[in-house]
Amino acid sequence: MHPIAPITLEIIVLILGVFLLLAESFSKDGNKNWMPETAIFVLAWVFAFSFFTPGNPSPLPETGFWHFYSADPTALFFKRIALLTTIVVLVMCLEYRSVVERFIPGETPGAGLGEFYSLPVFTCAGLMFMASAVDFLLIFVSLELVTISFYILVAYMRRNPASLEAGVKYLILGALSTGFLVYGITWIFGVTGETNLSQIAVKLPQLHGSEQALLFGLMLVMIGLGFKVAAAPFQLWVPDVYQGAPTPITAFLSVGSKAAGFIVLIRVLQPFLVLPTVSGKILSLVAILAALSLIYGNLAAMPQDNLKRLLAYSSIAHAGYILVAVASVSSEMANPGAANVAIGYYLAGYLLMTLLSFLVMIIVARHSRGDDIMHFNGLGKRSPFLAAGMLIAMLSLAGIPFTAGFMGKFLVFAAAVEQHHFFLVGIGIVTVAAGFYYYLRIVSAMYWQEPNDDTPITVGPLARLVITVLAVATIFFGIFPQPIIAALQPSQTAATPTVASVK
Image (cartoon, rainbow, N blue to C red; front, side, top):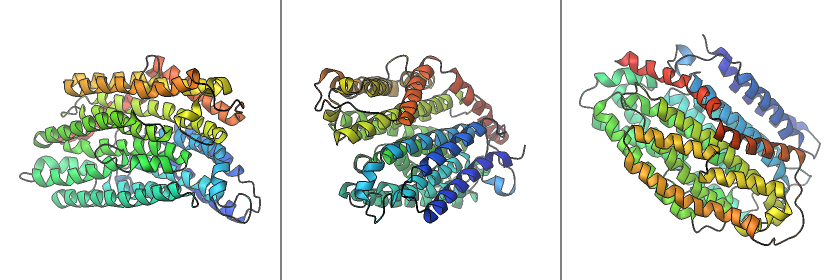
């Protein structure tokens, strides 16, 4: 089936972003709330439409433009992650409006909010293109669309020194990582003469004596992607950028950028796994990155008192868990299902629990004038609803049974055991125990500490609805993971033809 229908999802999102920018430019209404509300409505329809979009049974591209673009089930799954993330981030932007207005100079009310509401839509389009990219050219272009949007959004609050500092750090290190990525692509193209991943998979077995050049190029690409997924030792930007950026953008970076980075990493690695002389070294390198991310992320999170900074180091640790699953992909690729399902499920669960925690944090910080753990003292008395939402998020992030976080870690460890990565499983179990400490610190503050302010916290109807849906979904998919696993199962057959055709 010709994949014209799937690409209409990205086209609709791009048209929506352009419409919002143009409409805001000519609008004289100081109240810009209609922009995120319109975007949420349209993106929700696009998300629903994605379930009726016919996709390709395999990631093998066709001719013309479709040489760059794939609409296999894995791509559709990650497009839905991008859409859901953007919808929740726009809800956060509505709750965060008062903070942005304090740090954006303007002669009229609402000046400067238009771009803050519309840029996440363009970021969503870039994330969706990344999910379907099967050529280094489209990977690079879509990645830059996402990254440039984040450069602007991270430094958006121009009168906030922390936001400006975060933007400068993210810009410098982001440009450096892009240089590594482009240089690595150049090496791979120089050896294979191809930028399309499927064509690279076909040519690799025919190349002899070029393994060192291929490994060098792939290592450079992995450095660039390691920055995007916040894996150690490429995580230096994460704590300061997460803390300084507007909180909705921090949530977007933590979930959307990570999910897109991992789908690109999986697609890039798969062609090289057909070479026995290369696959073992690649997966060993991924295993080392996983171990470093697990150890560094969890240990660095333990002494943190600022919740955004704690979740930043936590994000590094969760990247480590996902890398454990990436390292557990079978080198034969005959049955990659366990690792692929673990990666997809973990990212879906991470979306639910991370967005839930950031949305609660935004509402609490708006009333408490801070996002340190101490500002959550006595939240159980001030707002039992918000405290329950944060409780579910923290328990899931820690990996307590009957939550999506527990099931995600279970699938990751099961995939690692299947490939005999017992060392990574041991590190993972120890670091999970460390996670219990710093996640339950927030729970202790909410329920066992006296509140700093007795004023009740009010929650708007839209935010209340989203918090309820995220909390219920976190529990539901932790008990009944079959819907997510079923959505990922077709990717097993989708990944096989690429290698089967080579063999």
